[in-house]
Amino acid sequence: MNQPERPHDRPELEARVAAHPFLLGLSEHHIRLLTDCAMLTRFQPDQKIFRTGETANRFYLLEEGTVVLEAVTMDETPVQIDIVLAGGLLGWSWLFPPYLWHFDARATEPTTAIFFYGTVLREYCERDPSLGYELFKRMSEVMIKRLQSARDRLSEAMKMNKPERQ
Amino acid sequence: MPNEDKKMEQRVAAHPFLQGMDAHQLSVLSQSAAPTEFEAGQIVFQAGDPANGFYLLESGRVVLEARQPDGSSVQVDVVAAGEPLGWSWIFEPYRWQFDARATEPTRALCFSGILLRQHRHEDLMLSHELFKRMCQVMVRRLQQARSMLVEQQKESPK
Image 1 (tube, chains in turn blue, yellow):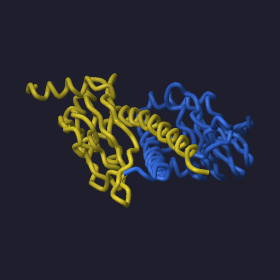
Image 2 (image 1 turned 90 degrees about the vertical axis):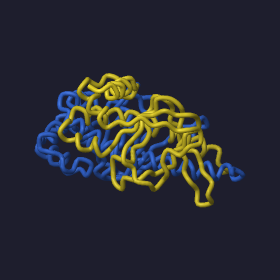
Image 3 (image 1 turned 30 degrees about the vertical axis):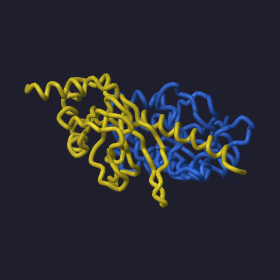
Image 4 (image 1 turned 135 degrees about the horizontal axis):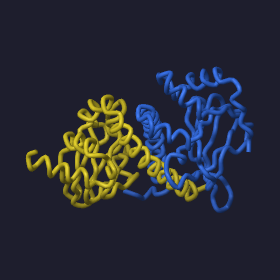
């Protein structure tokens, strides 16, 4: 497991949180709350960020690099199911029970990210619904796009696999 | 309170998606709700049409389908009784991405997105609750769609 960098420089961390495209437009107050839960982290090419079935207590906002989501199949050949680019959000499973990762995530190039402790953030959101609203709204926007793209690829794949289908 | 409003509040309060919402939130939601019914085979909405709200299914079943260039349709998801249907009202371009079709007689509550959007900023607790619940359903559907995609990719000719 990669060791996260210690947030010794709070102003820098706060600036990086505020600069991330996913959080653009949030108030200073919200950025401060988010920074409380934030840590900087780096991954090397091919490094695993999380594995299927492990506890999901966090999510990542990528600053640089690329991460692929993979499903590990019976014969151990991973199937790539999605790709997250710089500026994107990685990890939904921390949001709801059973809080376990559904897939593997692997960096494919040198990657820097801010990661957020979901457990603390969930409490913050319950105490401050304006933060919860802002975060969930942004997350649902990203999720809708991913869901639509997954469904598009699914319908493509189903068509390819069943050419006789009317 | 007129009898009909009261009935609507009871239906809204009874829906599993809204379980645990407080009386004020249920009352705001009821004001944006209309009861709807679909026969088996009836189109609920069509891809490309303006998306002005969402549905909470009370009974029945709706399939989501992607229309192909050759005119055929591929089923991409199923929404069952007790679940919400439709996200496209939340974000631009506010148009449905897929076709939704009832596959059996279906009863639903239809919520006006315009009315809810008006309440969104002044009633943050309600917005937070709604978006949190929608995210929860979305995560599940996303994981489902991706798992199905993995199955399809394993099946595909190498």
